[in-house]
Amino acid sequence: MNVAKTIGARPEADEIVAEALSWLGTPYRHQAYSKGVGCDCLGLIRGVWRSLYGDELEVPADYAPDWAEASGEERLLLGAGRNLKPKPLGAFAAGDVLVFRWRPHLPAKHAGIALSQSHFVHAYQGGGSVVKSALVSQWRRRLAGVFVFPNS
Image (cartoon, rainbow, N blue to C red; front, side):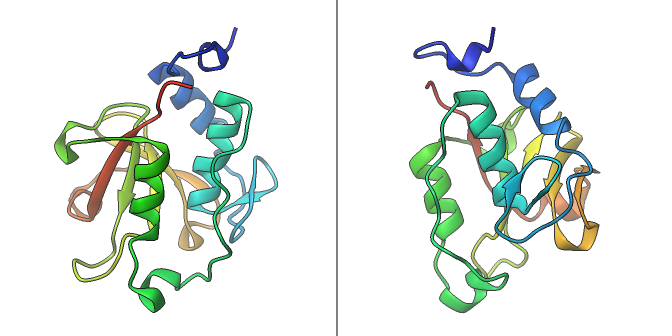
């Protein structure tokens, strides 16, 4: 039984991690969110949400690959805050959504799901697909937000 689909239940970390790992190898496709077909980083989060809760996460407006730099808006962090529960940056755990910014003066525009304190799953154009990456210092210093999946 899917714990998250039980009324009011929050998905368990191992359930979130298992679902995120099932997306490994899904090709990178901008604005897509279909396991095995294609997704971007936001599409990965949307697809995992759909699997956990059985419905769609907030549908974002169309966005270009450089949307954050062009608009200057914190759309990704604001959207995460509307749909997920924030927690302190250093307190992330398996199953949490991690949001990153490429440079300190730019809005956040990348996301993934923590597998542990040392690894996460994400989709990015440079990787070509959904991949598992180590949370090395280069990633940790870019961390802009940490969120947990809420009660349904």
